[in-house]
Image 1 (cartoon, protein in one colour):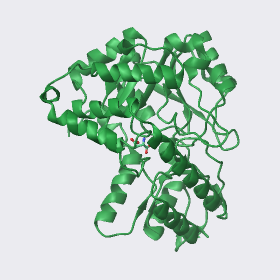
Image 2 (tube, protein in one colour; image 1 turned 135 degrees about the vertical axis):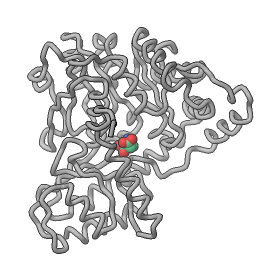
Image 3 (spheres, protein in one colour; image 1 turned 60 degrees about the horizontal axis):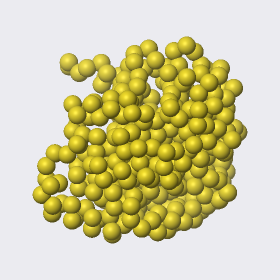
Image 4 (tube, protein in one colour; image 1 turned 120 degrees about the vertical axis):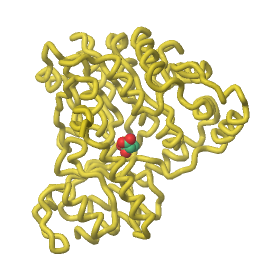
Length: 395
Ligand code: GLU
């Protein structure tokens, strides 16, 4: 067909695929409840939408702007990173991208060469391995399980290190597990990376969504020796209910930031100015909505854990961050459900969609067969109804 090998070898994003399928079934009249994509059900706060409306009326925003981002947004991101992550950064270190996913793509393209290895703790978010491969490098997967709290330690990292190890992807709070590394563990991992000259790509998109006694710690803040080789990535999507606006960013040492800006100057030019203006308002305006949404997610988190734990064969570790729960369904595998034997979580996800009209993302997508991910960022009524249906089918 002439399709390039890199596209033939690539998987479609399973999180987006599950979400698209659930939406299509709903549009066709099926009462499907989607636990697929991690997407807050709340509207974007009013003051952010109003800022975008004003920006859309200003002709200055009808034109191209700097590829690396509007100066006001780069400043706001630098100030926000300094405040929330605790690492002093300047606007020149910031590159605004079309969502966190695009920021990650820029990072891998600017950092990795063919043959480089990237340590990737599993369960991992679906796009990391594919993007690493697109850059010609090799993801080296480090499995973790419910028993180790879905966290890698320095011994595991050290055992996987070779002379080709270029970078580690470090994510806390984690998508898909909701695990939050304690600050001492984060510091130890950062110190190990610094000692061996390994870059750290740290995805902080869920930093404001932590619950109970857990607290977020940013790797370069607790391991300052690692800071010169650390890239922070984040965005407005999850914190401000702005998934559709597509504004994310990378904060990197200057040379790397300039490399990403150069890439963007050839590939996408600037991110939509109106969306950037909205992101400025989100970062610099009132933050009350962030806490209100966090509280709602926390309430839903507890409900999801309670309901799932009550199902025979389901084992669920309490997530401490993000808005996902990642139960093990090992105890359900091998059972007959509605006349069909379930051998893996891919089949389980199919059966849940067919019989419970509930969409979940199978663990296989995250490098963790036997598990499935449920986002609890959906409305309370849907959450109750969907969990009830899962219990009915599995119970
Ligand atoms: N990051 C979200 C998720 O994991 C959005 C979908 C995606 O981009 O993968 O569901």
